[in-house]
Amino acid sequence: MSNAPILLLGGAGIVGRHTAHYLRDQFPDVPLLIAGRNLDRAQAMADQLGNATAAKVDLSRDDLGLGDQAVSAMAVLFTDTMGTTLRFAQNRGIGHISISPGIIELGPDVAAYITSPDISPVVLGTEWLVGATTIPTVEIARQFDRIDDIAIGALLDEQDDFGPAAELDYNRQTQTLSAALARVDGEWRWFVGEDTNTCFRAMDGTEISANIFSPNDVLALGHATGAPNVHFRLALGESSSRRTGKAPSTEIIIELAGIDLNGKPLKTRHAVSHPKGQMPLTGLGVALVLERLAGLDGNPPTGSGLYFPYQLLDPTRYFARFKAIGGQLTKLADV
Image 1 (cartoon, rainbow, N blue to C red):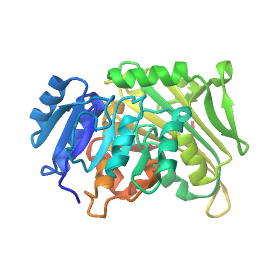
Image 2: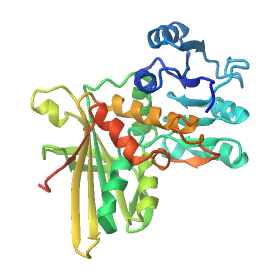
Image 3: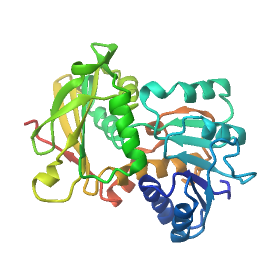
């Protein structure tokens, strides 16, 4: 394990703050480097954390403006359209996770990895809430001998605190990147325009208008389970908790159908939720990936490769931390 700091690019933003605090709570002696385009905000965050330094990032420079500063692993929490951050990681042989690129924007990162596959671990981090969908789904799937259908429904409360970077990503991926990928009868199909219109039932059974959406979970779950039908649906509206007068929350509905281990038909319906919205779970996923990349979990740092987050995260460790920060996995009735 290196004594060099973990670099959080965009570490003063909402996801960055959650990530930094989770790292600090678990590893008070591990130094953090909070970098961003606003040095004052980064410095304020570093001062709050302790054992942290701040820097202003410059994406036009291959060293990001950090000079010869050593780094043990890095997370990119905003959109890097220049690819500088991944070049920085590869030049230094350190692990890199970015949570911004949509499924049709993966080309630059994949090409950078293919060009230099033996240098760094590269994590394609745009799973929905960075593991909060894939890890529970893969664990629930253990009840099945064969999965025929995976239907995910993610409900973002319109009053949730997105933060400017997350809002830009949401707008880009739902408007500019209007095509969405799903698996239908074993075929990968793109949906556009009105064909993306769909719906799902929230935790409380309310039917929610939604659109087909394609974070990396679609690819990850399709290949991890072999399910011939994989759909991810995204809705922005009122969460189940707010309909009861409580604070806005985030919820992910996971519906699986197939054949159980005894050869009988089985359908399951679960919900992942957090009473404080999407950001705590996103920050947790980033923190756990960084811990794995840097070898903070007691195992050697992750070797070079191209990964989805769920492939790096131990489910037992994930669920323990998930529950500790208020995450809930609830079995729902098939209403």
